[in-house]
Each structure stands twice: as structure tokens, then as C-alpha cells.
Amino acid sequence: LVAVGFLTGSPTAFAEEKLDEVPPPSSIPVETVLSGQISVPMRFPKGIPVVDILINGKGPYAFEVDPASRGGRLLSKTLLEDLKLPRKGGAVKSQAADGRIFTMDAQYHVDALGLGTGEFRHLDLPFLDSQDTVSGIVGEKVHGILGMEIFRNCLLTLDYPNHLLCLSRG
Image (cartoon, rainbow, N blue to C red; front, top):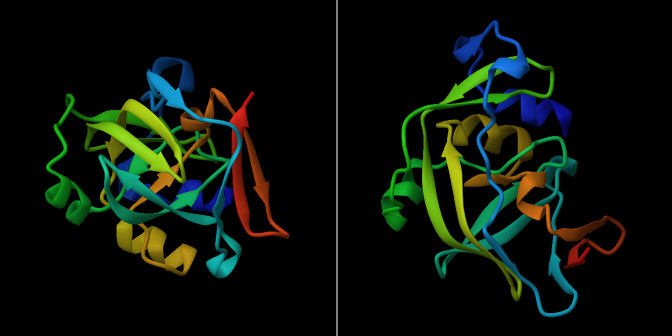
């Protein structure tokens, strides 16, 4: 999983900077709506967890679950075009798993990211045009990555034996 977080950036986009000089993009939802515990099916093409989500009520879209990634990110130009997500500012910087800094094109506002019966509301996700690269690593066409900031207000369990992603209030 650490390699996936590293490989989502283009090597040419890397710059020599220190983390404390880079304001991280925030993928923390303004509101997390969970009624009890939810469990959603999780699959493992090439051993990497993938779940289906809804964005603003549309989908499903396959997203990688990456515990090594701080925030979420969008990878698919098609998803941006289909959903007509509003752009929220210019380029943002993020840190790869190996500590290097890379620049993502822009952030886009998502009103609701649905996972089973749960919902994460009002979050801004950066876009990095790397769907083909990440999909090749994951072994399935994915439209984005769910990083840990999205789950900040939840207890997240990746139940590998039962192929479930489980969420509850922390």
C-alpha cells in the first residue's frame, strides 16, 4: 500500500521541499453521517483494498482504500466531467509515502461521498491525473483514493478475512 501512495504522483512532478513548508490539502468532511455500524463489501485485486462509493448520489465508482494516504484524491478526468464537480482553487501540494512532495492539479468540492449507508458531506478532494497508473497497480479501474483524513471521525476496520470495510462512530 505504501508504494501505491508513492506511485500516484508523476515522478516529474516531485520537488525538493520540506513537509513543514507545504500546507497539506484537507479531505476532512465537514459532517460525517453514520447510523450505527455500516459494513460494505471490499475486494482485493492484486491484494489492494477497493470499495464502491457514490459521489453526490451518482455511481458507483471504485476507489482504492489507502491507509498510507493522508487524504483522498480524485484520479479520473471522466469522473470530473460526468459529475461537473466545482473547482475549489488551484494546485495543491501533497506528500508521497516516501516523503517527497508533489503537486496536484486542483481541488474539487464533493457535497456527499456515500459509502454504504454512511455519508461524508462537504469535502474538497484534490485531483491528480493518474488513473491509468494507479489502476494498473491496483488491478482494477479506480476513480480515486480514500485516505485516512476522510475517516477521521470514524472507527475504520478493514476486515480482510470477511472482505468488509466497517465504519462506526469512534
